[in-house]
Image 1 (cartoon, rainbow, N blue to C red):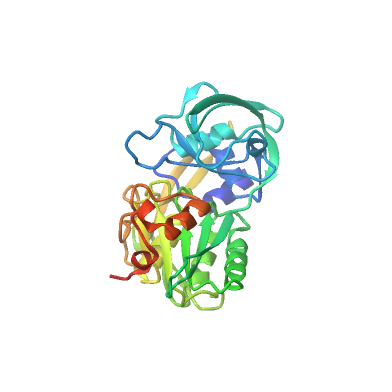
Image 2 (image 1 turned 60 degrees about the horizontal axis):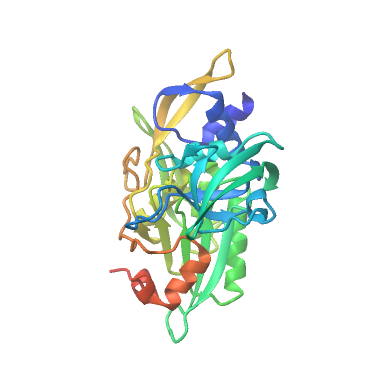
Length: 340
C-alpha cells in the first residue's frame, strides 16, 4: 500500500471511483526503471485512411522478448490473447502486456502485409525512457542539425536521461531540438517538473488548485536549466497524458516551444486513495493541475499550436527521413520551427 500511495502522489486519474488491484499494478510498475513484460512501447496508430485497426508498436526494448521475436517499430498489434486491440485503450493494452515473470502472452501482429501469431514469455527488463537521434538536413543553412528526443515515460531515470541526450546531441553541434511526447502516458510528477526546468530558466510550470483556488505553484528557477535558448518543438497526440501534459502545457504557455499534433488525453485530476480491506481503494479527487495560463486540462487536454500532417512519422528514423525528404510528410524544417 505504501507503493500505491507513493504512486498516486505523482499520477493523475480521471475521476472519483474504485481503484482496483489491476490499476495498482500498472501504476506501480510504470514509474520504475525496470518492468516485467514483453518489452514493447505502444501507441495509437496514425489517423490514415485504410490504416489497420489496432495499436502501433513504437519500439521494442533492446534484448527484450518482443525484439527477440522480430517485432519492430511500425508493426501493429491486432489482438492480445485473442482480445481484439481495435478499440483497446493503450492503458488497458499496457496492463495486458505486463504480468508475472515467466508467464506467456499470445500476440497477433501485422508486419507489413503479413499477419502472424507470436507467443512471448514475459521477462524482467530495463526501461530506458529516452531515445534520441541527430538529424542532418543536406543543403540547409539554418538548423541544419536537429536533435530529436523521444521521451516514452516519466520514470525515475527520465530527467537524467533527457539531460544526457541533450549533452550528446550538442557534441554533434545540434542547433535545434524536437521533444516527442506522443503516446507518453505520464509517470512520476517530479520528473515532469525537473524536465520542464531543463528547458525553462524561469516561469510557472504548473499550478495545483483545489476548491479554494491555487494551493501550490511549481516554477523554474534556472538551477537545472541546460537548454533554454535553442529552438524547441514539442510533438503531442491523444496518447500524451498526465506528466506529459504538464510538460507540454508549461512549454507552450511560456512560449518556450511550438507544440504540434492533436489535443492531448486530458488527465488533470489529483486523487488520494483510501485503502479497502481487499487491497483495493477508493479514489477521491483532492485537487487538479492547471497550466501556467490557468487552463484546466482535465478531459480536454492541451491544445497544440499547430496540427501535424497525418503521415508524420512516430519514430526517430522516420522523423529524420521526413526532414531529409519534406515532400514525403508535407513538413520541412523551416516550417516546423517557424514561430508564425
